[in-house]
Image 1 (cartoon, one colour):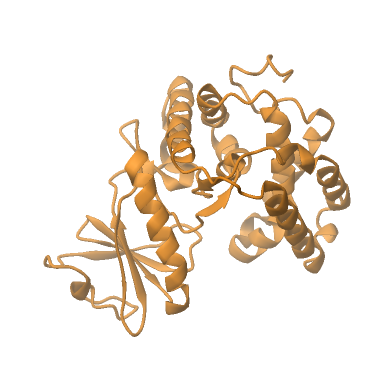
Image 2: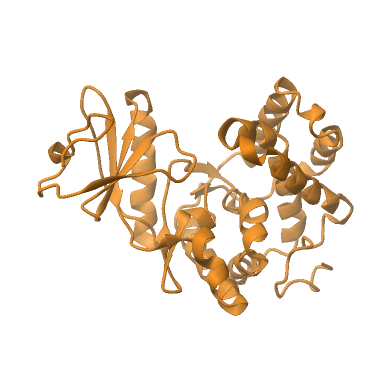
Length: 306
């Protein structure tokens, strides 16, 4: 079986005989992805995104040198498509299995994945990174998206959120720049028999702050498992102590909410109402920015006044 709906000749991509291909339909990616021979994943990308995936390939190769992840194998192209080939890791994503583990194990796994991402951040610091410029530009871009999509109609609190961030974003300027995965959350983490096997999907890699790799912890991880999400925070802080961490974390969470609704409308329209509820929950933290979020059950709860 060498061809599938995109007309790809998979055999040209591999030296070994192609015995099976099956399409992956999970996730929000616009690219078609296939599991080949139960050993590889082939991502079929438009040629205009080929240059982007050169950077994805570079970062993923760097990541695998220091932390658990899906191995990057090859990036190639023909006249029609680009092909990003990675290892296929046996197991299930965290959203499917995390609740089947004891709450103690959920917390432990949060600690484990945190210490893996710390390895990556420590290995690839970005010296001289303009954090203030990066964050100010990010904020202005998010505000523009919110205005263009009339977010206020669905979220009347948006003006207050924007003003709150403008008044507090300076707390994030002291963060150091690092290379990030930028989509580091349960859906992109593979587990097998209670063990963490590694992170997948490096499409969104970018330079940023450590908080870029916490961006899905509240809206995604904590909604499924506050124990895992709390362990993720605790595991990171064990390796990188940050006394004002929750202040930074809460401000960054609020920053992310500004343009969240337009993204959900485009890629996950059935969950717009749920997204609004999550944003309003994050907004409730506004009067306690230095405290841990209400869902947090970790060991720093009392140290910083959660």
